[in-house]
Amino acid sequence: MYPERRTALLPALKLAQADVGYLPPAAIAEAADLVGVPHSAALELARFYTMLHTEPGPARRLVVCAQLPCALRGAEGLIRDLRTGLGPRIEAGAIEVERTSECFGACHKAPMARLDDDYRESLDGEARQRLIDELNA
Image 1 (tube, rainbow, N blue to C red):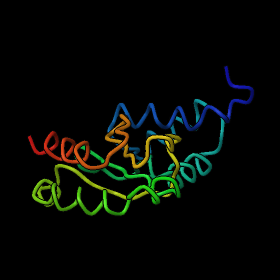
Image 2 (cartoon, rainbow, N blue to C red):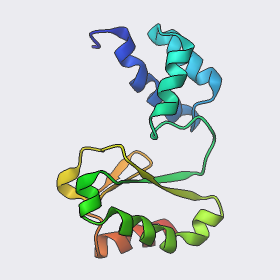
Image 3 (cartoon, rainbow, N blue to C red):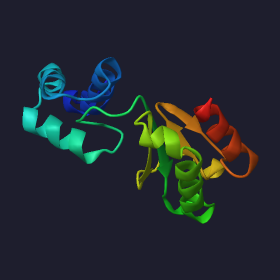
Image 4 (tube, rainbow, N blue to C red):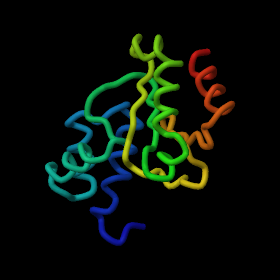
């Protein structure tokens, strides 16, 4: 499936994270061994991508794209509204709202965010408030 085994590292790390919830050193090492790359290369990749987490975190993660199309369509306002609307849940450690410069490839439906592994697109006006209400329920 992969032309070079090392190209399977990112998917392997994403699967490991889905199983554990984050990437502890043992999971990173196991993914590296499975793919056949040095542990240091796997750790470097895990630290590079904001979608990968090397520390335990909240039960839910909401990552807002801030690349140019999303920025032009209101990404910063979306982040502000999410942090305001979800304030008590953020303070309780139940959810995290973060800004990323990684493009999620949904520019045609900006602004958008990734909730755990699901894309939430066209988050302006009503859709934004529905997301806040859903996460506060």
